[in-house]
Length: 144
Image (cartoon, rainbow, N blue to C red; front, side, top):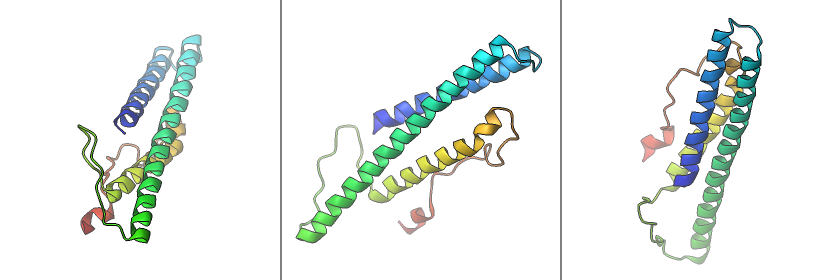
């Protein structure tokens, strides 16, 4: 899971850096279409696609963990087995199914926001929520 988060974070940083390069190139060219702005846009598009792939991989990981946890719970309920905790990997704290679901929602939210905000980075009007801080807590947190 840690490597998935690190890969997603690195892809995001590269995406943001590419967006900054596009803005710099546009500013330096006075808004004119030049080879430099075109090259910056091409790199931006590549980084955007890589970031989308990283988001998809993170979402797939979360979904597979949800299915695995659900399957284990179903087997435990069907067999009447007492819930047992597998030994945690060193350095990785155990995670609850509720928290895993919250992370899945957060990843889906980010993907949706980025898909809707993709035009804003390319010069369209900014998305109304892009500057707002995302609070990863969900209504389920209050019930815990």
